[in-house]
Image (cartoon, rainbow, N blue to C red; front, side):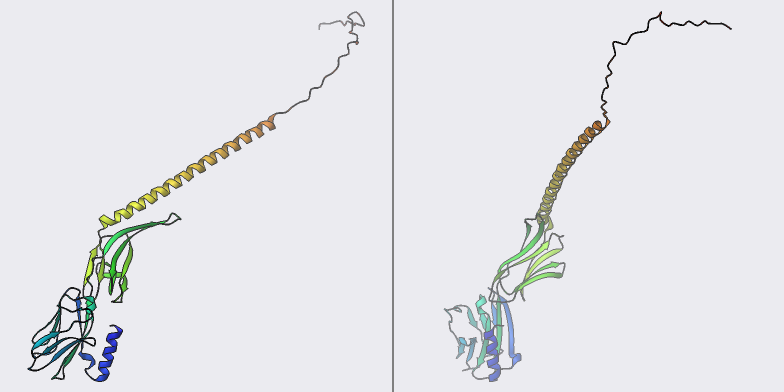
Length: 290
């Protein structure tokens, strides 16, 4: 209820024109017709019936004749009807018709006050896949349910008949875009857009949407595996080169330890030393046999 409506209610209450329980509520979807009851069974002769929208006179019954008044750039022109009981019908309702309507009688202590709310038509929410990647190569895949340019509605994710996530636009005069995220799941989920009198439901088709998420996840997995494989190959080659170099170095050090170098020693021969002659100082010993 807007502040204007609240103010009018307070004024009417303080003036004693009607009691609080006389205020009634009516709701309708934009484009539909709505009938506002006058609470009269029949209009008497010479009785005047007046309808006001807020504090502006929009229709009157006088001498059993209907008279209509256009307001706000002829906003009600051709859309109002009065019947024999004084009830007012608004044809092809608009969201701008929302507000407080009062009917009064010149000959009776009867007044009826109706708070009318005209809700905009609800679009069918749209479910689409959404994937995003950050600079750290982490990826997430989810579903997005969206409703564009809506007001006074609630957008919710349901699993079966239970709602577990929702977002709301509570102001009837403001319109905005709503988004809800959900991880890829099975077909038991649905997205619902609703206001107090209507709802629109979109059921999740996992076959059409979540395979995109699965493809994205598989691509990310393959990329990660390829990157890991490349790193393993580079590491293996590096380790092989290091081991080979270490083995060659160890072999060279081992060979160096096994070789022993000996310094030669040369002796000079004395050529002047006389050789013994056979005839000099030769003693012959006899050989005896036992």
